[in-house]
Image (cartoon, helix red, strand yellow):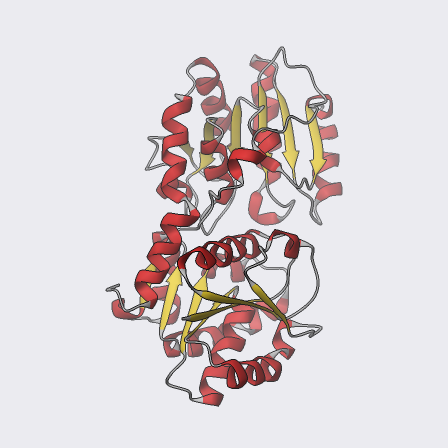
Length: 365
């Protein structure tokens, strides 16, 4: 069987990383895998194993990759084309309508809470693509959402029937985790007080202003430090806010790091204050490291990963007082590290790739 995975680029994003994890794992299951990439941007190609065949369409934008993709599909004729991120999904499904090859199964994956992602996007092009999404998603052979919450949202937005959509969680934990966690980079702050860590792009979705306001409330009662892993267009704004709140001596903006596990494992608490998510890969990474977790009960993902609070405190979105109270609670009573790690092992690439293959081979939704 040949399965082709179609992504926009190799940029350092969660969707790209999860599709690479899936591609790598499928090669261990006697599957020929092509990873078809619309644009050359990004450096995540270094994560692709040697058994995956990378097909570069060499386009400047995802939406201009339609005809190169069609040419590839007509030439290679894979049994399945599996796409991720909605611009790539739209291109995938237009290609389906144009080539009309019933021997290729076209599956799109939705990786974010679609209605909120588009509503809150500063990019007008995202809003303009919504009618195409609503029209084309029902024409897919199936739609895979990365959480139950995303599945329900996509069903509502695109008027999908139950037999057209299912959810399969992300393949977060890979064989490399055991090695990655061994590294111990320097943490440039005192370890005599609790270290909180957050990981994610500095964008509106992650709601770092609420995180910093929560930290300011915590520091009034107990000294803590916060390290943020990630970059984004709100970096200057968030940095300025930490100074305005007079907590900049307690906040470290580390930027993008190649091995976040090596930093996460050295912290005491993982903090997520997102306004919305599709899943929340970083929560699984934090669980794997045995951290106590405080996360917003946003749509969608955190409540599913944390099993409605069993593996971490869930707090209302945007409520800095509730977040600060939860942080103080887990400082007093941390979660059991081994129980946390056991939960993370439910999201291994091996387990998740089995679910994809089961569905691809005709398993019931």
